Image 1 (cartoon, rainbow, N blue to C red):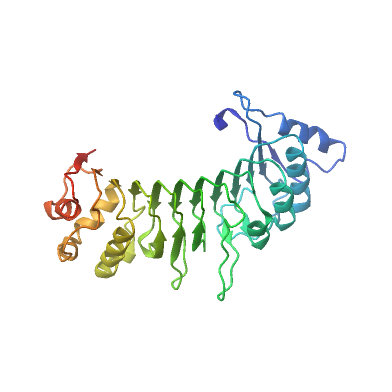
Image 2: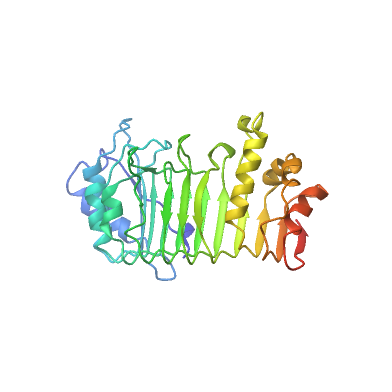
Length: 311
């Protein structure tokens, strides 16, 4: 699917104020077809009047118009750079879920109970960016409970997604999922094959990972921030616990920042009797120089002789 070939339509309240312009604009939105035949509705909101308030009614009309034209891939961008999103699409989630969408991309949208309970029966790919999950301290939503066929999930700079599940989920990317100090991430995905983690050290907290079929893991710490200083032992324990959850992986890739962090924690890793990666066949390290103690930690637990690659 060649999304880059599709221009991103933008609209504002001022631009669409005359009623007669609305159908023409919507027609332009749904006419943006992918060259290979997939139907893509790609909608971005801008406000030329300088207001931060999203006109949800207007936005909803555009979305409904796009969905009425056999759209299978919907991209909704509220054009906000804030992760603290106040834009709720509760009234629209039911409409969106009733269509034959297979791919949904949302940016800066509040994910609430309406999303979790709407039932996206055909959805196979979900990409959320700068989205926030509505929650209270007594109970956290499982936002994917209504997506039984979901196979690919990307969470990019999202907040409070502490429960992630998917009976058909095969590929999961967590790129900076922000958590409050008391929150820990749970993942239940019995068929998951590929996991990509791009965490900030402060938010790298997992309480349960049920991923028995995991094959490939890619870990890339995004930033060596101030949290590391004075918290080396805490960070080391988080890595050790995480590695225990990932012990079924047959391929492990460590990014340069990850290697740099772990290289300063070899004294904690050496205290472990063995590495948890007993099925490891390939270890890829994106660095020119890696301490032997770190390499040995990953290799000493494997029942086979893993291939070691430096890139």
